[in-house]
Image (tube, rainbow, N blue to C red; front, side, top):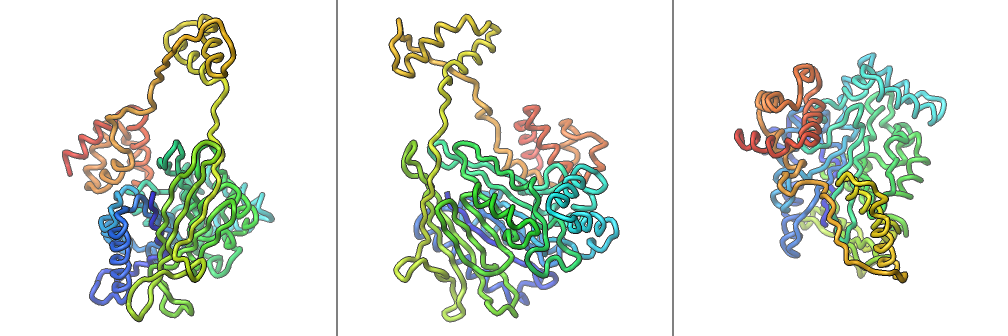
Length: 457
């Protein structure tokens, strides 16, 4: 799997609407050429584009229009599906004018002014569980949400962060956790220095499931949070891959348990002392088998230089190395001792038969699995129902395609299929159609939805 890590794109209106006046455009063009060459040279396409926040500059909807066009162009160049563009918000994706509203100030202060992180956690959870307070909490990123919804990355009170799980190999899956670092961003000088924002324990559960490699994507590094120690300890202990932005200082850290990438900004401010556009290209693979499995990581940290005007390898582990390589152990897969009995109980239940009738067979199968002697070892094939129908389309692709339709068409399709009700029209679009997709998935209507989308495409 190949990951492209971009951050701090900073599309700024009105310049981004007049390309011939946009002085950052040449650097983006060089970046496009560099990605195209790297993917062309080794014949490996990009599977996922990770966008680490600060997509816009002042959360203006027209800035997101320009960003969308550019990201789709990048996806086409590197062979990535548009539905695999994944985003998180940064402080420039927060509407600072909205943060001056009294109701927004109140909920942000309620979190920030807690006497300790336990109190701040409680205040955040209270906001997420109260409709009016949640509305105020997410109102500053409304334009971001309208942009992110087409990629399945929108945020609201029941989904203050997102997850996406993708297949790697050998039964190992990559679980990407998109964390929200901007809950209290935008007011009170909290963006001016580290240690003033708040992440919250609800975002760092990162449940360590077997055969799962966790990846964290977040705009601000842990040092920018009031709960920095808690956040960093948990992320370091549970996320083998970590991608951050914001600081515009491209670097990499590799230790035994994890590998952390700090993005260089695609469009850094010109007055920065260390001005240097950059991005990361990371290849993942599973090597070894069983208890010997490891996550193999090979990364290129690319940065721009003025003379000659091109991207090059920015940071090298040593003078003789251009790739950052690392291997991290993956725990051996968990295989329950009584897997055969559990399977037989499922089959018995589906046939409406009492499990005790299968006891002798289960014992024989257990003997076969364990190598213990038994009276007979019958050959038994148990076929369990699969989780999803092969014919069902990709939900991620459907989400992206659905959001490319006109707003009235989206509304009519969702109503006609019974995915939303008239009452749901009062919800924000990103929340309304998130619900519609969930209902379609639960009711087995994804194929019907795909047909309706195709009618209008």
